[in-house]
Amino acid sequence: MTAALRLAAALAACATAVPAAPAHAVPAVQRLVVLERSHKVFAQPDRSSPRLATVDGRRPITRVRTVLPVLAARTGADGREWVDVRLPGRPNGRSGWILRRRTRTAQTPWRLRVRLSTRTVTAYRAGRAIRRIRAVVGKPSTPTPRGRFFVEENVRLGSAAAGEPFALALSARSDVYSEFDGGPGQTALHGTGNIGGVPGTAASHGCVRLGRRAISWLAARIGPGVPVRIIA
Image (cartoon, rainbow, N blue to C red):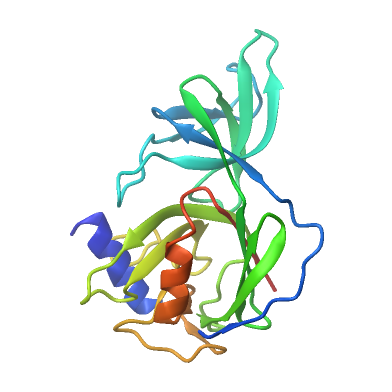
C-alpha cells in the first residue's frame, strides 16, 4: 500500500466559515527552513551533543522538500550556524538543532489554530484572524492531540479517497493509535468526502474534518511548514 493510500485509509477512521474577531499576540511571520538533504538532529547546537533523530529531506507522501518552523538560531562554538526547529513525528511537539548548511530560508504569514472546545479552525494571515471554520474534531475516546505542530504536506486526494478533496497532513501523531492501517497514526486536517461528519461535533478518530469548500480554501493557501496550534 502506498503512503498516499495509507493516509487516505487513516483519514477514513479518523464548514461553514464565519467572520473571525481580531486576534492579538499572534506573530505576523513564521521563519522556516527548507531542507536540501536529510539532516541529523541534535539536542544542542553542537555535534558532540546527543543525537535525537534524522529528518529526511523529503516528505513521504508527496515527496516535496521538508519544511520546518524555526524556533531559534545560534552560532555554535565551532563557528557553524545552527537552527532550532520543530520536528515531525513522535513524541509530539519535539524540537532539535540542525546545521543551517544545506538548507534554504523561507517564511510564511499563515498560521492555523484549532480550538477543540468550540470545534473551530481559525486561519491567521500576518497576525490577523481572517477566517473561522466549524469543524469535526476527535471524539473523547480518540481525541485530537493538543500542542504546537505544523503542516508536513498538502495532499490532494482522489475522488474515491476518504477525506477528499484535500488533506493537510500534520506533524501531530495520535495519542491513542501508535499506528493505523500501516501508517504512523498521523493526524490531519481534511475534507468530509466519503466520510461525512457534522461540523461542530466531536466524532472523528483524532483528525479534524472540514467541509469541502473550507478545506479547498485552506489547501489553496496553506503549505508545508505552516504552524498549527491545537488547544482545548
